[in-house]
Length: 218
Image: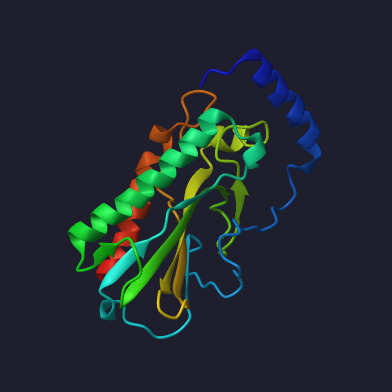
């Protein structure tokens, strides 16, 4: 990966600043997509689910898909035009991917408005720095979805992954029926220059779409 002189100097300066903190443990954080993360259960440290009640997804006939949120961990006021375009493309790609795959591979009808027996799919995409030597769920850190002075080393070391989060809501009652989150472990976010590009994360997005659609087939 080639870096500009200015960017490289900034990274070196930052390395000196954080040198004394390198050995400290990382505090668990979350993206904020869910209001409550305390009841999530995990068996492998990579995925977690939370069921609110017994339900049968097959009882529902239609699904309304909300636009996918992209949680960039970069304040919108500080996002460049290219970053905003990237996040818009991610949102549209994942949302349309859900629609296409659900219509093709399930018995659900995708609708644009709530109907009888409709469920709502809401989801979010973010980037995380993973710590695979930690076996407990939540041992990861939300990170900027692009190369910054603070995120560069994580990307360069191959420690960044995409985190997908989703919830299924009963459109009639407004109740959350199911929530899940999953780190796409096997798809490294590898960069070829200073910026994150759609092509760098497309394989992870495709995997997340595949996992989500499988849930609708159960």
